[in-house]
Length: 272
Image (cartoon, rainbow, N blue to C red; front, side, top):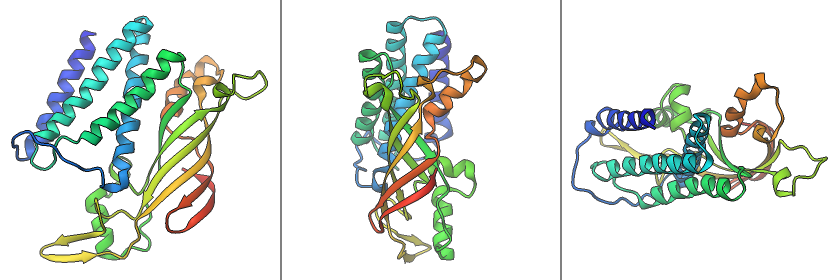
């Protein structure tokens, strides 16, 4: 517990001085950002808080703690960490405490801990996949805007580029079907949500040096249906156990059916 507390404190301190101290501060205030980025950031909060709870619980179990203590510590550390970050936002002039962010954090946290408490397993997992958003049809100004928002390297874009991210709720079919003997334990069905064409929080208009740009790029919502793999429900050789957490976080590439708000239905031979 002491090592987790030190990491907890050190990382929050580092985050404050590396990020928040660089911006103007003001009195604590709230910020309503529900209608921004087509709610992609809310799905990000849900998936991240779910994975934090999952990771902390497994770390505590690995150290030898029993189920109840691991649950209590993971919940206390994970949820309070996210709350403190949101409080930092509340004192920053560039943001504010977002109630919907904290609601999303609560949903993600509850998704993990409720399942672990009720079923002692995860039948539903929040996952993530990424493929860089295409800028082939962008003008030079639009490409520069995308780079300013999301970065130019893959290491920046996987974290920041809402046009390349997809968030999934992946369901283990074997578990919810009653765990039949002859059904593959590792096979999941996944529902995903993504966006495309986002060049601003609420609209695709922006200003540079007093000049206003209004892009004709369409802002799209995407709903996806695909298969997935859950290796936590699979029997693997001990030498391959290390890959289980990877596919507990990342949606495995599979064919997918997409509904697009601008283009209707279409299929993908392989969707990342």
